Image (tube, rainbow, N blue to C red):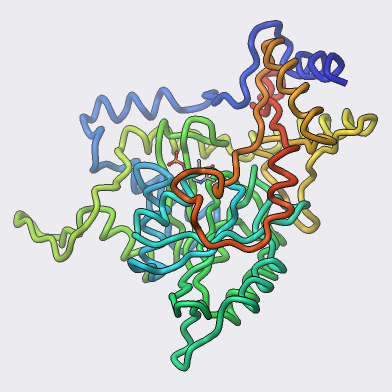
Length: 383
Ligand SMILES: *Cc1c(COP(=O)(O)O)cnc(C)c1O
């Protein structure tokens, strides 16, 4: 399988050079917009492209408000605060994610609780969540969800749409509703992915996006908070130093954050957003080719869940076992075709090794088997 796969990938990208996992594509107005900010001197925290990027992203996702931030981790930090997470609280999340998800919980002086993922979405399992809550939690007379042992507050649930594939949102919203958990979506990897026709990141009380260099569109570094009117206005306020509008006085009405996205980065984002649907179409075509390739092999291609349109940000396969995974990683990387294993489970990192958790059978199974394949938009597929 390995030689055939390497040939197949080289065929997609038509090159004998090194093939990265994910490279950005600048084919539209990127240079023009960035130069406009330089010419205007408005490269920093004030400028027309920030407002435009926020408006364009709200319109694209159908979110009432979108607030640009300096990166996706900052967006997550603020989103958890907006969801009511306070020091000492617990936030339920998945162990199979990028570390930023859990770092944001720690920034709130809260702690993660890890429950298992589903094998078909690679994301938080509503069944595992419900089972863990049944066994370990109760609703107090005020309706606050607490742990049976110690009475600690379970405030929010933070699922992540792994590699662009939406989690089972209907079922998760149902469980969160009954257990009074605020739903916050980490949609850093799933910009443009739809669940039953609606954009991921717009289902919870808050959702977050990332525009890091390896994501489906990039601003160099950047992120976005998606929220309704009231939380969106609040998000803008506390990410911009909590400054009250005034002609000249510096009035800051609480401790705020300097998490603003610079105008220079927003300019890049406005241009990238114009290409997003083209990127998604190309990535979906690439995913279809990968899926067809793997029909004849024992490794299983990860498809979008039923009822969803995935952006297929990163293509992934599930190897038969750890030995096959290691052999694939070894031979492809040696051949200059970049592949990577899925993240180590958060429970295996020193910072989160002592966190509360349920059974993590699927997460452990996937940790040993999942490999990401090169997923950049192939050059010949660009318009
Ligand atoms: C990329 C990413 C983030 C945010 O990352 P930043 O680099 O801070 O923009 C958060 N969560 C997940 C799952 C991610 O993949």
